[in-house]
Each structure stands twice: as structure tokens, then as C-alpha cells.
Length: 381
Ligand SMILES: C[S@@+](CC[C@H](N)C(=O)[O-])C[C@H]1O[C@@H](n2cnc3c(N)ncnc32)[C@H](O)[C@@H]1O
Image (cartoon, rainbow, N blue to C red; front, top):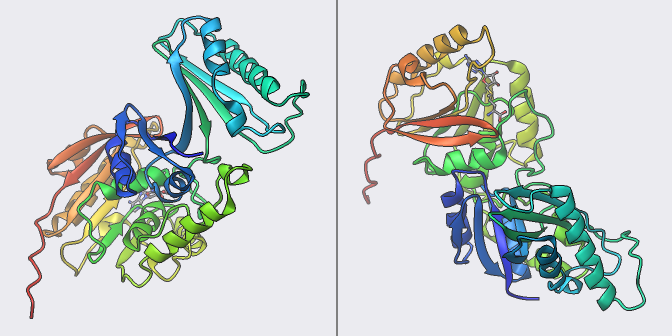
């Protein structure tokens, strides 16, 4: 099949970053709340899954239609050529959600969609009245929003944040997709120093290295659609070959993560090794108060504790104060701190150049940005 309607889903607030990534892959797109839509063939599905750093999933939009009654939902679903997607042994669980719609009972909507797909398949796979569903998995979702039903098939399987390198994690790891988004929001360039002084399980430095060497974030994993009979192996093979060709393994990088907790430093090292970046990213034990840098024009990206639990507040404020003092010495550096603490600037001792609202999972946070000066232009010698 060609010309699939595709949707890259994203966390709220980072749609523009995902749209930029989709366009960089060569596909025009439109952007809506949490959805970046584009058209593409099997190769687009493979390339989007492999390359999108900030998106959550890649889905096929099988249908979109107005549905104010169960009849409309049933008929609209049955009109989809499901036989083009699902083989007769497909396993196809249906999940759902409903927002501001007349059809608000999600279990009923799921049931109707399931029944309509079965009816359609029965009429196409003659002689089959009972589907065993013991074949490849197709995860179908019916999403109702303001009486419009959107029916999608997930091509990714595990969410795209699951890169395959995080063998171990700390108590509050940032999602890999958000870590990549934070880096994309900075002025960092791979030939400048990059530091994460709260590196925990190492997600931010590892994502920076993947970006720095242009390594496709999905290089280390498989995707659900690879198990589908119509997705030829050659398509993914070609996409992976392209990724291998585009990687710049010889790009030197100066990336260090540090953390007060030596146990986290060990975990971060393990994860970097798992990502094949063991010799590329450095991790060390250090408290942020001791942060210094001889280099100039570097970038700091950090996701410190937010001090949300009772009793932690004073300690965290004190740490923010120490951080402010340590970073005040770095007059050419740019600093980006993600925290839910609305009083962050007061403790840190400086007003941000810019604040950007972002969600860290369900937690409303801000990315406090302190922009440093631009480095001088390199002159030819
Ligand atoms: C929210 S977690 C960071 C999670 C990390 N981004 C990840 O993906 O795993 C905050 C980290 O800050 C570290 N930390 C707390 N106080 C610190 C301090 N004073 N100096 C440096 N690190 C500190 C904690 O050990 C913890 O690993």
C-alpha cells in the first residue's frame, strides 16, 4: 500500500519539535494538539519510527469520521478496508478514549469498533466466521473528540521513548523523548561542551550523544509493524542502512554527566555502554555546588530534584542557591534547567532569559533558559 495517512503523536508542548523532525525526513505535515500528521508509504513508517526523537508513537490513521451514534460509529468503521491491513489471523485488540463527545462510553465504543471490523473481515475472508486472533498483533484505537472518531493502528509497539539502552534507571528518570526535546531547545552544537550536572540514569547526556553523532534513536530496537505480513523486511533493512550511512561516529564530542549519587553514576555508565556510547560520554560523581569548567561556550541541561515531597523543600532551595553560585562563574555558558519549582529563579539568583512550559509526564514544569553569548565566528587561517 502507499499513501498512508500517518500520525506521529507527541507530548503536549513539543509538537513543533516533532513537526520539524518529520519535515527533516522529507514529509510535509500538519500540526494539531499532540498530533503531527503526514502522508507516506511503508518506508515513511520505518524511517519515522527509526528517526523521530521527540515523538511518542507512529500510527496509521485508518479512518476519521463524524460519529454521534453507535450506528455511525459501526458503519464508518466497517467502511474501512481492514482486509488491506489485517490478515485473517490478526490479533486486534481495540482500546479507546472519548472527550467532549455524545458517545462517551468507551467500552461500548471499543465493542462497536471491534464488531464492525469483524463484520468487514467476515465479508472479505469468505468462509471465516470465527477469527482465532493467533497471528500478528495490530493495536487499534478509537479516539472520539467532539463527536469525530479517529481510528488508528499503532505501528511502533513499545513507545518510541523505549530506545533499548536503558537497562537500569533511577527513581525519577526523564523520558528519552523529553530529554531529546530539551536538547533540541538549546543552542548546543556538537563541537561545544555539554554537561548535565543531575544526570541520574544518564538519559540527557546519552540523548545528546545520539544527536551529536546523528545516530537514529531507534537503531537499537524493533517495531511492532515489522511483524506484519505486508511490511517487507527489505523496507526496514533499507531504512536501517540509511541510518547507518547517516551516522557520524567520528564526530568528536565533549559530553559529561555528573550526579551526587555514585550509584546513579554506575547506572548511567551501564546505560551508555548499552547504547554503544561507553567511550563517548563521561559520567562522574560530583555535587552541583562543585561544578566548574575551564572550557568556554558550553551548554548545561539539567533536570534537578523539584522538592515536591514534604521536608525536601528547604534542602532543594539550598541546592538551587548553590547551583546559581557555581554557574555564575560560567559567563560564556548557556544553562537550561527543567523544574516544577515556580520559585526556582529566586533561589537560583537570576531571572531566566526565557521560560518554556513543558510537561514531564503529568508534572507541569518550566524549562528555565539562561542564554550565554554566541561564540565568536571561526576565522579561516
Ligand atoms: C530528577 S533526577 C534526574 C533524572 C535523570 N535526568 C534521568 O534521566 O535519570 C535528579 C538527580 O539529581 C541528583 N542530585 C540531587 N541533588 C544533587 C546535587 N546537589 N548535586 C548533583 N546531583 C544531585 C539525584 O541523585 C538524581 O539522580
